[in-house]
Length: 289
Image (cartoon, rainbow, N blue to C red; front, side, top):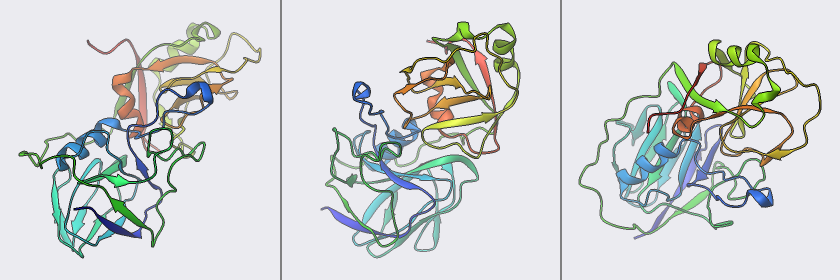
C-alpha cells in the first residue's frame, strides 16, 4: 500500500534523484541523477526497490521526515547518525518505520552526500524519463522544503532477505584515476606533472555541477580561446585561473575550458562524495578490468 511523508526539516539541499536521464546531451540536458550512483543503488536494494528507483539525496546534513503509514527506509552514502522516533539506527541497513514516527538524519561526519531510499520509491512526475532534480537546468521536482508532502510508490517486489550491507565509510584520503583528456596537448609536461603529483583541496564553491579545486596553477601551452565542445561527467576542465574542476552529475553539456584529463568511471562515485576542505589527488592510469 502506498503512503506519503511530510518534510519537517529539508536540510541544506535535499533533492529527489534516480539514475538520471542519459541520452539528451545533444539537447543541452545533462544526465543528472545521483552523484554517488552506487550508494543510491544500494539504498534501493536494501528496501527491495529496483536499483534506479527515485530516492532522496541530501547534502552534508540530512532531512527530518514524518511518515503517515508504516514504511521501510535505508540510508547510505555519507556517514551520519540516523534515528527513528528518537532511537538510533544503523546506516546501510533496512529500517522499519512505524506510522507517525519521525526519521531524522544528522550531519555527515564523512562524505558529502547521503541517500534515503523508501520502500516503494518516491513518486514524482518524470521529466524526459527521470524523476531526478537537475540543479543546473531546473528540470525535475523542486528541492525539498519544510511542510512539503511527498508520495510513496507501490513496492516492486518482496523485501530482501539480507537487510544489512557491510560498506566501508567514504575515505578521508581520495585518489581519482585519470586518463588524458581531449585537450591534454594544450598543456606541457609541467602541468601534467603538477596534476598528478600535487594534492588538491576541494573548494567551497563546489556543487552538483562540479568539484572546484584549489592548488597550484596548471600552465597552458596555448592562450587561444577554445570553442565550446562536448563535456562528459568526470571531465577535468582547467579554468582561466589554471585551477581544475571535475564535472559531476549536473555538469553543462558543453564548455570552453580545455579538458586536461577525465576521471575513470569507476571513481565517479568517490568524486561525488568529496566535501569542501577535503584533500584529493589524481593518479594516471586506468582502473583494473
